[in-house]
Length: 489
Image 1 (cartoon, rainbow, N blue to C red):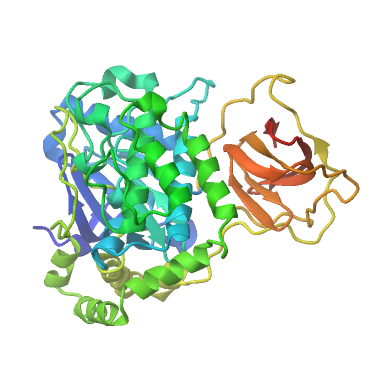
Image 2 (cartoon, one colour):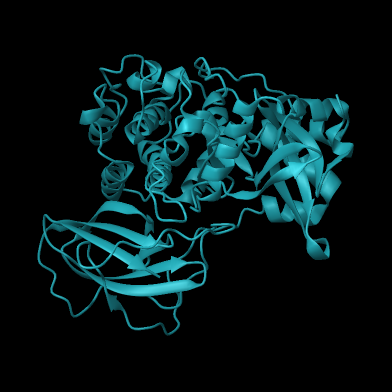
């Protein structure tokens, strides 16, 4: 095996081999940009021995097509796609964190606090709602189905941010000829009944898989009997899990946005707010210091053994078996995820030795924050929100290179003090172009598209934030009704 630490691949220096699969290999790599600026990436290479396999070439290209159109805080972004020495590659953002599989394997049979489990699931549904509703540059619906929502494909970053990974076996209606080639893909333990049967799947299959994941987060185990949700799942949350796991997809949540709204309503009633900081603290509690210290000693050797350890693909206990793959797709194809604590810490320490302290500080510092609530500077007057049916649909989404949480907007946004506030609650559904973070006062409602967020009846001033774009709007929530809003920033 070539020592990846000494290999260059175009503009990338391969630091460690992370995983291998049916289509390619994933490496931790360093990219040197103009002016000597450096960053770490997860580099996925299509192996040279697949160049004569048109099916695998199409699949790799389809993954690039899909993820290039996705720009959302909960989805790991694609940084580059190309070829070098006849080998195609995908470069993804490096995420310093741990997969849910690795976290759960560290505490077999132990579930997370229900509110934190619901928080993680809500972020997954948030990513799915965005992906399911994504459009191409001509405004045509992509109708993406992930098909592999599982504990291996969800990461918790060191600051508590949740990331959905690996659209390697996703399908899109825009290129269905290339993506639907027969057979069954995914992981059996998370697959919907229709997916297991090899039938055509839609977005509701992802809802089922996310429901299995939520059950596993709460109880530490996937449901043994889909007809019965474990008694360890609290009553209100059990209703949500049960609806996700309906064998008849017509009885599941109609959309990921609807499931997200139910989870947000559950979280709204929680005694203690579920936050990224609490989630990050849970990760630290579940992964003991001793294990991290042992990893540091092994990585400090910086020898071939340490590198091979980084590249180990041995499954952890409890790994869900993969289904039989499509002829052109392998369900075991590695995701371009960053390594988690354990393998993740090893890779990060190796990166420290080879790249230097500057990159390590950038990747490992614990102070990353999600987009914060608005700050105290003047901002334009709020506009009246446009409601579906009163204006044309928004233009197709713009591509963003790195859809990280936006800087804080400029002014505090508060409840409209002069507004009348009738009793009761209603619901807000909002879509924006481009996607945005939605704030109500100091409270972040989430990233668009948002579905059926429960709010007190009355008038509210919202702030929409995407990178440098900011907009204030006024919405009116009526008791027991849903207000639908579409906005362009």
